[in-house]
Amino acid sequence: MLNQSLQQRLLQKLSPQQIQFIKLLQVPTVALDARIKEELEENPALEDISLADMSEPLEEYPDKDPEDYTADDAKEEYDEFNIDDYLQDDNINDYASKYDSNDEDDDKKELPLAVASTFFENLQAQLNLLILADKQYLIAQQLIGSLDDDGYLRRPITSLIDDLAFSQNIITYENEVEDILLKIQGFEPAGIGARNLQECLLIQLKKKEKTKSITIAIHIVQDYLDEFTKKHYDKLEKLLNISPTQLRDAVNEILKLNPKPGNSGASNVKQMQVIPDFRIANNSGVLLLTLNAKNAPELRVSKSYQEMFQHYDKAGSKDKKMKEAVQFVKQKLDSARWFIDAIKQRQQTLLKTMNAIMHYQYDYFLNEGNEKYLRPMILKDIADTIAMDISTVSRVANSKYVQTEFGTFLLKSFFSEAIQMEGGEEVSNKEVKKILEECIGNETKRNPLADEKLTEILKEKGYNIARRTVAKYREQMGIPVARLRKEL
Image (tube, rainbow, N blue to C red; front, top):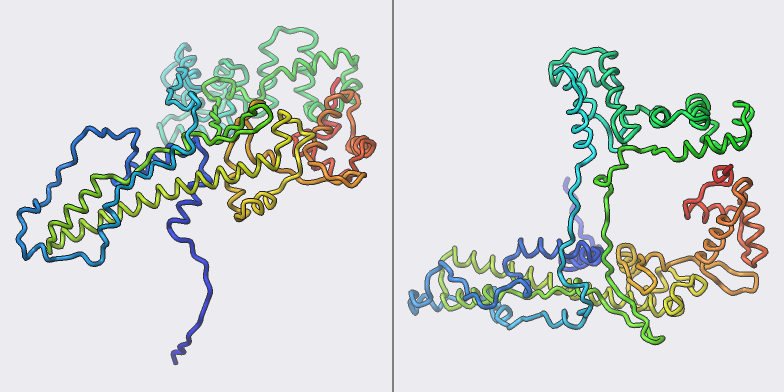
């Protein structure tokens, strides 16, 4: 038996406009331009004024001319559309001028690109210099193609033999492949083609001039790599029967080696250009905030599409194709308006959030980034100030940069937790991290400071925090434990 019932439920749903705004809000300036270009390509009703040629005549439409319609045809009305809404002169580009920056750096400039061979092209060029039989050449190509980005051969030789047999019908054996691998390991940069870190370091050391330090370094990497990585230097001195000076020289030789030779090429280095979303200038003690002009594109709804609506209105055709055309134009006009509104709302939210952050950390920006003046600040503090949700502030802070006179910073870096001093006042945990960094930087590397000792130093300075908190801050700064900071 079918049971039917009525239920009332309260659901929260985001409108398409809200979803579009949220997506645009978290996009940084460097990616906003690509997002706008994508929208311009997809929606012909959206125009970029800076690219539009205003001297071009309006587009001629292939539809029937209004004069070809009879009076009876003209009586047809499209009641479901209010055409007047789309005939306004909507040059919504006013908002862009409010946030324009006068900085000359905002002019469109093309950066020169360096032309360099890739890592694999470099290896292929060296391979072409060898005198090899056809079979050996194909095996060498297979080996080069199997290297990872670090320059290591991670795959077993047996797997490569199977690949050669199935994909290229080449029957070979393990010793033959290893002979070709030895030739590749002689390529530059040194260490290429190694199957593990130990082999990589040994290849590089064996290419160096044989001195006493190099000989000891080879011995360490070959037989005592585990003790070396754990920095058991006293144990190494006893095992190798060498002096501290000899060990130090050998260790220095090992530290000069490249553990990732595949990344040594300049063409493999991924460079990320940071374009600041905001600029803060100090004008005689008064901070001035500006939004990057790239965040205020000169967009508008296409006038030709508005004229198209007027064209269809005069035509008043009952033709089904005409009605579909009106529906299409309406959809594109709505989409263009929503996108422009989302861009406008994005700018207002960015400025509102950054302005609140700037005033909250006013002393910090006035004193050129002195972390002593950085106030404890969490997302909720800014969200309460601007009367917005914490998630909105988070989207702004996680991907936006601000340029100041003392550097360019991610907004997220201005947020920090509070630590209570012995006197009762609260300070930012960044101040504690700065002190930790100074203490570790000034420590004796032969006998580095343990977390317990760092805790005692902080307590002497009035920062009453636990040892586990010190360990947490140290790990956040990417500083290893005392044993791994030990140097000879």
